[in-house]
Length: 184
Image (cartoon, rainbow, N blue to C red; front, side):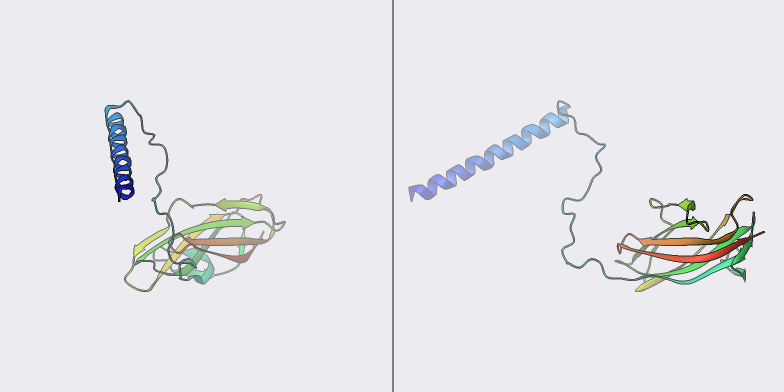
């Protein structure tokens, strides 16, 4: 019986020492004796997914078009795949993504490779969301439109445009490659 009492007393002493040590540290921080670094990025204490297998959902590029022009309402005028030097190359595509807790976050990036396979343009918008919505549906659709211009000194031939779309909420990333020609 004395052994159980002694274990309980030792446990109580350990807990009291921990409480006093924590209180002392908090007082020292509050008084400025101990400084806390604020430049460290905060992460949740439990940074884990409790259900194995990742997040379930889909991310799909449904419709892609090279256009002569795309207006403010995302209408594509005259689809084509051959462009001249210095001409605006308009692109329009539709992305469908499953929502995660009612939210959708989409990031789009581009990479253009010349006929020799060398990267001539790379647009990385990893830290800025191109599409953010709180959806009520199981999946949401988003239309994207952009344009780029190839310089007058660009090499003639077949170029490859890689469209990279990510949904960080679903931890999904897709890449679609499309070809277009540059002529005189």
